Image 1 (spheres, one colour):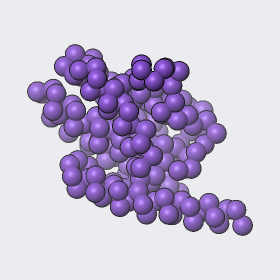
Image 2 (tube, rainbow, N blue to C red; image 1 turned 60 degrees about the horizontal axis):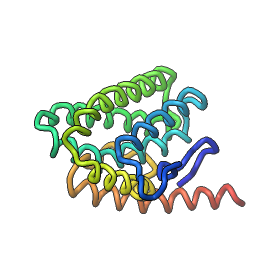
Image 3 (spheres, one colour; image 1 turned 45 degrees about the vertical axis):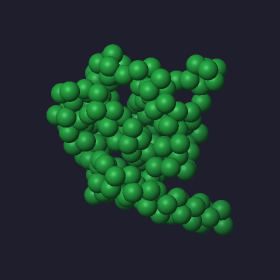
Length: 187
């Protein structure tokens, strides 16, 4: 995965191994890191990979937990998936070089909305989920991000087994594509 100089690894932490970070803490930190990148670096190709991998990790780890644990979460998760889909469409335009300044503004606004609506659900999820489960999901976040597609794929399934399978295939293609691109830059 291409890393920008400002990128920090979601897995890194000042905690000891017996005090593992839980999923919601890690997602909040990643939300803030990506929001800072948006402010400092702006919308660009470096941000595409950051947001793309983040969205995949949330759809594989957070959204199933929300649907399973919160009885009325379906409408909220469906809304988040719609926002995520639009974010992916805009990221694809950025990646292709087709984004306009209004698209950049919309992307920043959608990201802020994504963060606000998602983090509003975190306190309720914390109340109904065992801390060990949140730590287990937190442990899975880093590997999930590392294995996620590095480019937006707005037309792939967004949930369920087909999502996991299609993300794995897309990730393999993306990582090969990224390696070939890096190889071209090295010449």
